[in-house]
Image: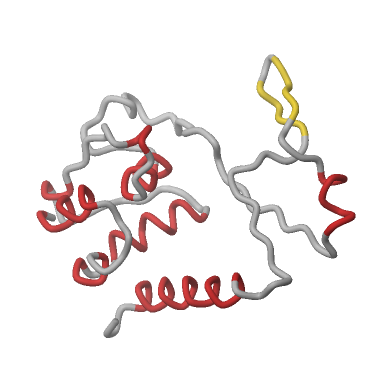
Length: 151
């Protein structure tokens, strides 16, 4: 890990989650919608309600993020080469099928700007700051590893 605080933090977070997940009192329910989903102009029913979970758990922690990209209003932001939503970038390196056609070329510059304040923005910064040799040891897609190798 060396002196890279981002890589150290990444390893610590993964190790801590792995340890917590071994506890028989811990449950993780992912890829599940909870409550009423507002999708203007229609609202649709979610997979679960909080009331479905409360009888079975002492605590319910809801961790969620954006389910779609949000434009920030930069002129031509959807057509500028090298400009992309962070959520799409994370989906690409995590191997989401819907993001595998994203064109990413990190060899054009040694500078990147990440605009955001949430976990996805931090994850992008973490990946861009982590030494390539450390990322090769992760479960990141081979396609992304090759892109990073050229950057």
